[in-house]
Length: 161
Image (tube, rainbow, N blue to C red; front, top):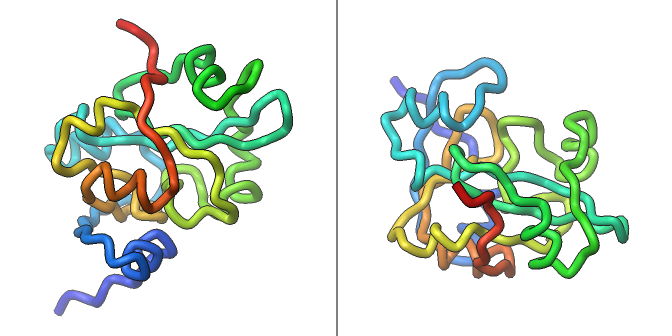
């Protein structure tokens, strides 16, 4: 008999805001990157998004949600959040800043609501896939609903190919 999935903070926030979503799980004991998760689940890379947390020169934190197979363009990202520069936070700081662990970080339900930017290509889809707030859980939802839930915005923040 399948056990009932425990709700993550991210799911509780979506439920509270009456935002429709569904979840899927995968077997994984420790961090694997988004590309391996997408391969495991047979998901398209351009519809699967990773959550990156950065620190700005001002000391503020910023969240960027980009396709798993892309890299953030730090100059574009800094411009979008009106910072001189942004850089990735250290892995050891992820839990302290977000409340999540590496591989389970999602823009929903962090310790604070940080300015959040979702790569504009997400708007092309009816649904995107993001982390569910813990390793082994993913949330599938409408990208506009995600923008609403995190009070975020769409912008181009990835490196040009």
